[in-house]
Amino acid sequence: MSQSDLTNLSAHELAAQIAARKLSPVDVVEAHLTRIAQKEPKLQAYVEVDADDARLAAQGAEKAIRAGHAVGPLHGVPIALKDLIEIEGKVATGGTQAWRTRKAHRTATLAKRLIAQGMIVLGKTHTVEFAMGGWGTNTLLGTPWNPWDLKRARTPGGSSSGSGVAVAAGLAPWAIGTDTGGSVRLPSSWCGITGLKTTIGRVSTYGVLPLSPTLDTPGPMARSVEDAALLYTVMQGADPLDPLTLGHPYADPMPGLKRGVRGMRLARMPEAERTFSTAEVLAAYDASLEKLAQLGADIVSVDLPFGFADVAALNLRIMAAESYANLHALIDDEKAPLDPDVRPRIAAGRTISSRDYIEALHMREAMKRQFTAALDGIDALLTPTTMTTAVPLDEVDQTKAPAHYTRFGNFLDLCGVALPNGFDAGGLPTSLQIVCRAYDEATALRIGWAYQNATDWHQRRPQV
View 1 (cartoon, rainbow, N blue to C red):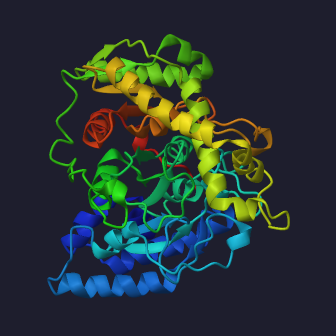
View 2: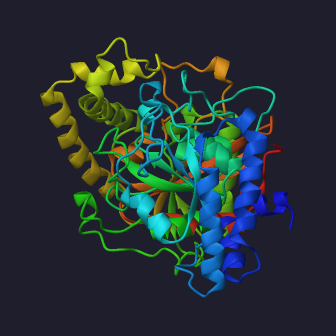
């Protein structure tokens, strides 16, 4: 099998063929490292590629599998990690030039779980500085190139920009991102891949550099819902080092993944929210609703107790207050080499009073109850993921955020899947967001799988 064939296979296909000894982990890892070497000069998805360690791990995986000592079904499958996720001794910049040479002194629980499954870390991917931004730009460390337009630099989506580009361009079969206001879903949308925003407490954040601990959630980024579900199964679980994970039983989405959507009640977004999207995004969204209706779902209308923009403002208040509390020493140091687009976003937290912050937390709890009541009897709320397709970098307005449809998921403690659902006239991907109640990732993934089983948008690849 050629290098391009190996890097085009889905993660679950790679896992199955490695387990059946039809593919060697050595060949799979080498194919990805070769592609990275070829494409990275243009795409800049990675902060650091751990080629030597990945090759050693692949050799060990091959020997273990041949000896009948596979540690799990994902043994030998490569993966990329966003550069917020710490591995002891490895680079951990958090996307900032100020920490460019920083090495981690601990390993994140999330990384330990992946490695314990025999997965092979290819390297660390770029992020917006401190993960504080949805466009995917990084002024000082570099902005990854959205692979759907090789002529004009466009937004890759953030903050998990490198993970989105790596998966879309075949530089990794899947990757890990984090999501505080949309940072898994935005790059998934603009890079034409699938991303799962998990519920707070599903996946440990121990060893993940924090932005806003109330809202931060790690999630899988992959080429299909099936891959995202498979990766999610090994990411989740209780961790004594992260108290938020305690008390949420493990929930395996795989047994019900392919049950279909017949009889499910799926809500379209309120008419007022449509005004924020372009005509091409709305056309793809409406076509997705129609497809799900054809598959047997009941598409219904819903009256929400507040608008997405109202929620976004409160979400940003919490993000700014908590990020400034975490990073004030750097933000207040005028000599620190910080991204000029990011510093003011976090510095805004300096003026948020404790009263305003606590008020936002109290309002969050009340609004969560109101939203749950409004969706009583409804399985999911469907929206576009982004308002537009990927924007040219020279047209980005850094004073605005692209997260209109995503921030409410973090603020209301929901989960959701973003997945490709079409292309605009310029060949750029559009995306559908499937939002479900807290800890109901299995339902979001089930709906997403049904949609992808009936369409082929997720199978399209950029011509890199």
